[in-house]
Amino acid sequence: MTAPSLLMLGSCFTTEVGQLLAADGLDVCINPTGNVYNPLSAAKTLVNLACGRRYDANELIEVQGLWRSLDHHTRLAAPTPEDAIEKINRSMEIGGEALSRASHIIITFGTAYVFERRGEVVCNCHKLPDREFIRRRLSVDEIVNAWQPLIEQFSDKRFIFTVSPIRHKADGLHGNQLSKATLLLAIDSFKGADYFPAYEIMIDELRDYKFYAADEVHPAPEAVEIIHRRFLPTL
Image 1 (cartoon, helix red, strand yellow):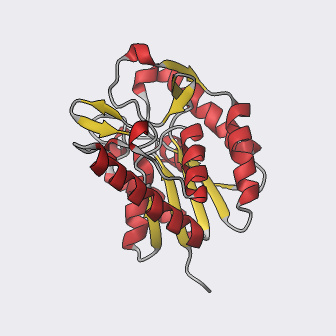
Image 2 (cartoon, rainbow, N blue to C red):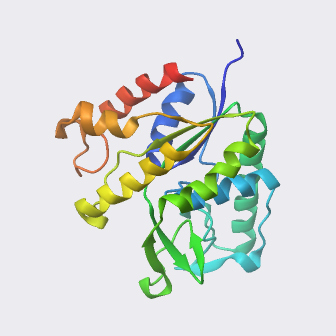
């Protein structure tokens, strides 16, 4: 049996679990363009990786002395546009190569809330002023319409979706629940994809603050390890 090759996109929870899978010896590419929290940005990332998208300097913005892309994580920022573009396009190449060889595409949705700037959903706000963005919650249909065509386009690969158990307290507890519910309903509507219940394992099975980090938001390492052990046999 051929060992699986994984492309993992999503929140920081994706990175934590992905690092454990890599330690197991699996071929894993984890968030090549940085953490992605909302479903539309994750879909855009996958589309861009598939088409070999390359960025140029006029797509960058300068914030606090670093050049950045609104489609990419802060770790790809750099003091000069040239260095930033080199890092960004290299990350796109790495992700594109991983997508080509991947047998599994693992997607973790973090939040249904998005920030729009000039009519476009951004992946990262890079601490730009709030007045530059409109913040709203995606609908179930928006998420399904973004992802169902991709699931069908890459029907030769196995999609596994999950929802990050990390609480987004900035949304308020009720807002966080509405966000997670939207993500769960969207994933439940996907055809031709699987779901792994990381959110339910954390919230319903572990159900104890001893499994959270000191911030009471992020899962503690022990919880991440438990979820990792539960996930591994599904591959």
